Length: 318
Ligand code: HSE
Image (cartoon, rainbow, N blue to C red):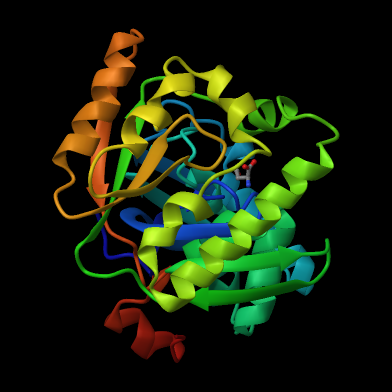
């Protein structure tokens, strides 16, 4: 493969973390890498995908990186160049680990870099959130770490919280079933009980405060939820039992459905093996194969890199 003009690396993310529906999310140490191989005339694109999603992502018209690129160009009023793209994907597709946010963040960053927009961080995040519809995946994907973000449909306010301790692991079990975010949102009720809303308000506030102060033992409460997980747990085999089984394992600080599912995430202090085995055994009992990742919280967020050769030719960016 020729040396790319531009390379963008985006981390996987886990949104919600239980109580923080559409608001809280964290970046994970698992990455997609997007290489822009050449620039092409306006409106001309070609794309190849290797790894996760390679079978699904053959139609260039529905390629989310290119769609997000065009939306960002439109947002900034620039006539975007066309380009050739190779996506090397490690983030599982349609499993609640932010693969679509990864594409949105990459598309916006490519639009910014390739067309010399040099947008400020706030503008980049605003464009990303507008395209994705909610900020809880794109904010940690772009910024890294654990983020709390609020979106009013036009403006975004966000805080990036401190990193996790070095002995904290993020164990993610990924069952071999897909749940589309649209279906997982469709499964939610239109109205919730006032008491459940108050429950989540307290839990999400506690989670953010615990994270900010390093009171990790409070996460088991902070990640509890009554707004969405009980409905989404019915959408994949084993969903209704897995979290209770994992929660009681020593060292497990908290457990949640990752994003809109079906992956399940546990924050673990100390050895992660028992948690990972329990998750995968539970999926097996319910007839589903699964794999697990033992990850860390990614702190650097998305990275844009232009190889030196092209940096000299174009005056550079980033
Ligand atoms: N907050 C979103 C949801 C994340 O739970 O539906 C999925 O994109």
